[in-house]
Image (tube, rainbow, N blue to C red; front, side):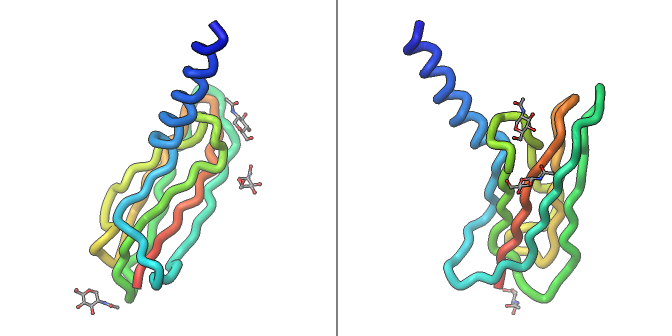
Length: 112
Ligand SMILES: *[C@@H]1O[C@H](CO)[C@@H](O)[C@H](O)[C@H]1NC(C)=O
Ligand SMILES: *[C@@H]1O[C@H](CO)[C@@H](O)[C@H](O)[C@H]1NC(C)=O
Ligand SMILES: *[C@@H]1O[C@H](CO)[C@@H](O)[C@H](O)[C@H]1NC(C)=O
């Protein structure tokens, strides 16, 4: 019983990391941090947040887009890359929260 509980917590943590934090592309050690955006919203009753984080066309080429879920308890927003990203100079990341839950995610854009 106890081992099952421990196993399911470990599994939840692993799945949580995959679902709510994300990396696209690969950050090189000499890349610049082009942008860091914190999106934090309070829960809405019977509804969810659907937020786009936009990085407009810039001078640098994007090498990596990294999203951190600051909740770390499976209740955060699910990130997806809508457009642009690695290999482009612009990018849009969508953060889709869960019903009745807030979001607190950090979106980092790296490039050179
Ligand atoms: C971005 O990539 C293109 C194509 O590889 C290159 O021509 C351009 O110089 C790069 N821009 C910068 C700022 O490095
Ligand atoms: C979001 O998470 C960050 C990092 O953990 C924390 O500093 C910040 O206070 C949080 N913001 C809200 C509104 O909860
Ligand atoms: C997850 O953590 C955040 C911040 O610590 C908290 O506001 C939220 O209620 C938690 N969600 C759940 C489902 O425990």
